[in-house]
Length: 630
Image (cartoon, rainbow, N blue to C red; front, top):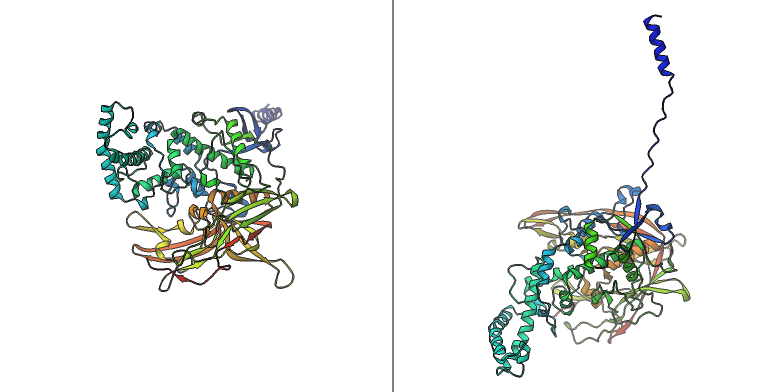
């Protein structure tokens, strides 16, 4: 056998050997969600099977990049599918301020404006032992009950400095007298000291000065109080710092010192931060379930783990009675159930949980949702304008009638005898507003039209295109000493913009003028929308729109998407730009999207009630009325 033949035999012999089968393809990894009970993982469930679990589990998103459902992207829509504001919302909530666009103001503590901090941020706050020890060293007894509110706009700083000096001068004198008389406290000097009149003033000064110094000490612990603040005085810089602190605690006092703020400051600082954890968890529960019932329609707000976590302003009835068919508070017990399942029952428990690493998602058992909930809930909206006063305000002429009932908006589910009022919240209607006119300033009445309307369009993070006569200074803001950028704070998208984080457009539905075909929807410029102008929500006045606290507007929009048929329209692209001339050079003002839109199919019926007209005038005077010069 030649060498070549032998080689061929060898080759064929090798080729005839049976090859081993290829290894099996690895099974695709199925995403799972941990199920929590009493703070422990009891098992894992495939992500897609959570809703089918026997105990009706709900998946709650704990991620740092969470955004409410109104900001959920839709890749199938291409360029239109990405909500333009989502990235900014996430960066603000997670306090990644260095990731914000240049034209977005890097603000923190945004709960009162509708953006809740992430659990990463909250865990860092609760875990800052140095700050909490600083707060703990301040005697809560120094935060006295004051029979008045303090607003920096009414504070005479020079007079308050004198008050502080008088207190510091008299304190050692009265302490010496107390010791000499063998009394236990300074208060025991009342009726005993020979300097009764001086002591009476000292007691007043003491309450105010000690309270202000304790307030400033708390602000200093949180790194909020500037060095220029006047000791013991609610000056402007202290008020600004206090406003930041109040925002962090979700209080609506805007830098004024009042009873609610003092009560919050007396709390243990870890407890105060833990309440923020419960509020953040509540919004995640609301978003996961699409439930909106908070007890407001029945005037029966619940607690979470025995805690009232909201400021009194969020339980305001606007002077209206509870609805006889008002839904009970579902959100509070559901949030409590989630907290107990996760084991977040105390500041220490949450801190320990977070230190071990927060899972991205968890599954927990929540109370059963109300029976009337479905993929398409019969729904209508009622706006009660409350007491409507068409009389000119005091600054123009005479006194006005007392308003007892402010405007409210009510969402009502079901039909006929089965109707349930889901929520009843304070809102606004139009009123007398200042306008710049030729020759000065005038008041004009901004009407909120009555009668049937519809909510057809829901818009997340809407932008407002300012009219051409908007002053340039309103359209820009300064960054540093010599840079100017567009002021998205005003026109949006953003929580401070004219329409807030979400809006529902009021359309008047009319028959098609052609006699056939789809009805015509007329936009009269009225919206129900979020707002940071929370003072206006409490007093009920606007330029004609129906304002809500931003987080309630987001809840409303999310509820509509969860429980009404709709079509996602996506980003409302627009090409709007203006070249602005400023003292620092030209600035290009651009708006590329008017928001992220959804169309409700069919629209939700809205009825705007006339309300109760008070005063002599029965209809609005739409003329401009010059304001008397001050």
